[in-house]
Amino acid sequence: DTAVSQTPKYLVTQMGNDKSIKCEQNLGHDTMYWYKQDSKKFLKIMFSYNNKELIINETVPNRFSPKSPDKAHLNLHINSLELGDSAVYFCASSQGLGVGTYEQYFGPGTRLTVT
Amino acid sequence: SQQGEEDPQALSIQEGENATMNCSYKTSINNLQWYRQNSGRGLVHLILIRSNEREKHSGRLRVTLDTSKKSSSLLITASRAADTASYFCATALDTGRRALTFGSGTRLQVQP
Image 1 (cartoon, each protein chain N blue to C red):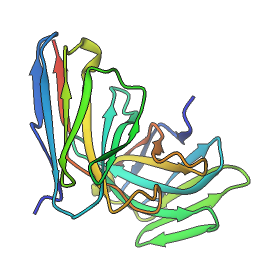
Image 2 (tube, one colour):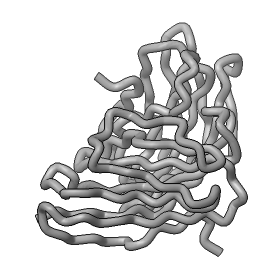
Image 3 (cartoon, rainbow over the protein chains, first blue to last red):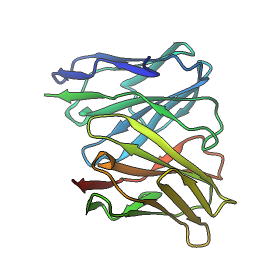
């Protein structure tokens, strides 16, 4: 069984479009995250949620809006896509908020290409 | 510059050799984690070492932490072709910031 799943795996779209990436975890974890990995493999936190409550919102453009309908799901909606949004987006989850106390489980990633 | 920086950026060795990767960080931490990322995949947690620990082992992995030098190393012994991946260190700062900070990774290539 997949622990953290993301859909879609690949997403190719044009500038200006709106798209969503879905994430689900079946580990019973309380905390979920969205990361962005750029072309140089640098991984940066975007958002984290704990029990559906937003905990971290890094300096991410307002065009990015996370939504957590329940603690097993954390979706990412992106409005007005730009070329610079092209990257691999990873969802992750952990048992709790204790950063570093709990290991994080990552999804397989969604490769977003904006043309 | 990044909180965590791995060194070297890339490493190529023969199967059976040991691989050592280093991570340096700038600010005080609660603990440090190492992750592996196979090409086209998500990250997989390898090991967590707390700030009051100096060394930790897990199978063929050995991690050391020197808080006075703000550095950590990951040693993979008797490497295998399947160890080919990128390896990242991630730090949990002691500032209360509730996020891991990842380095840019070391790309390890193990030649069969």
